Length: 579
Image 1 (cartoon, helix red, strand yellow):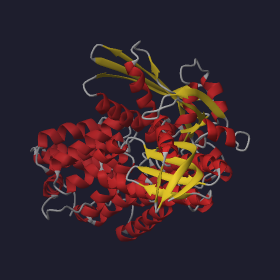
Image 2 (cartoon, one colour):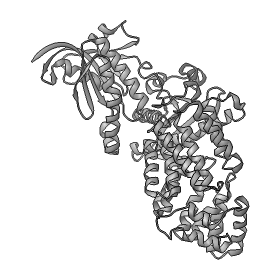
Image 3 (cartoon, rainbow, N blue to C red):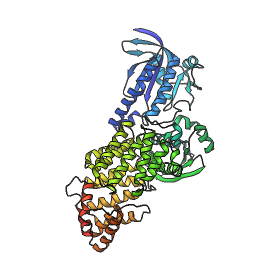
Image 4 (cartoon, helix red, strand yellow):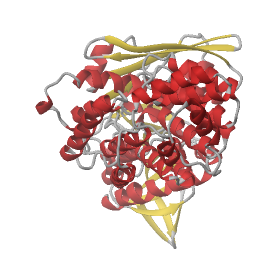
């Protein structure tokens, strides 16, 4: 045995049991990734060594107190940058310990562990001895918390914490993201106000805020300010423009929670701080049956609503800018604007701007991903004379996106759509499910999954996926595409009355585009015996896509059952679409 005076760093993963309960495999992979890419190199860099590595905890020793504190801050900042779900609490103590073989014992270790337990998620608590040694020797300010009675520690311990706003003050910027900070849409989520007069709801309001920060950080092109920075405004009457200036963000999301009886009302509003305009606002009324389920639902719903609103605002911001002045982010948004028109005349422009974005920043995964999706569009909308070449180009772009960032949901979305066109339905489902695992609020991934599940004959799951897309992004300008997938799914399962209802709903959407809504409508009408009306609808489909044939549709939509597309094709044949 050996006695030494060392700085002890104890760290523990926040809500580890809940994460494991939700998905063991994903959690274990995420923890392993964080430990290997962040924690171990950071400890080594600061002259420390890990003496214990448990499932949800780490114990490390340092000869220097200053290096232990620097390591803790670097650790928290890096983890916030690479992981939306995995967060740590850290405690640092200076104490005399016993080293025996590969283990460590003593009160100094116990105090470090108790300091960790009272730290905030993403935060760092230190003892007075650590504060005295590190004060004035680091770039971080300390905040005194006073004497704390720590569990199983006989005497109170004077505790300090690294001042909020300095730990992980760098935003949750995407790993592998090469765009300059100024080019990305940046957002701060302010602590939601508890309007209930019920202290119990304070935890719920804080939980909603924290989950929104985590959820938005999964949108890889957002620059999201970390929790420790935004929570310094908790309980204050704030000027949103001033807060945005202090945090260096373009958008601010704020809201409130109000409980009455067994119901809760949640409001949220997104503000463009540069103009002061409200980009989006919504109110949600829910029953308070299971607070955790409600928290998860609200997080997913609000993130799903905020992402397309910011994207649309960003596109409008750059759409009229001179092409020669566009940076990578602006070229990307201009390309996406052209892409989402679902118009053949805009198709080449979309590819042009997305290729320019990739040239300006070759490591920006979303530019490659949406270039892949644009090639997919050319096939699904019948804009290409060479389906195989378009799909090959789409696959190359999708794989490039994944190579740039294996945690980018859009990259998996793109490769999933290309696999569907190639008839690799299992690969398509797996890729789209990966996109949803990475970003559960990604409405377009749910839409894509609905489509491939319909082609796979899994109709009930297809409807569920499309319904999720509609719930997450009801104001999406291309929500019509999800509506027509619902119609096609009912058509393939031969529920023609339901299919007709959905085609009518699709055609009423002001932005429904291309031949697809008309062709599904024509097939449904024909299957219902309304052949003349079906021929009229088929004529509209042909007007949108003069080269449309049954052969092209059969090649485009590959089903698991060789006869799976028969209801669609047979109806179109009756409606007069050529072979």
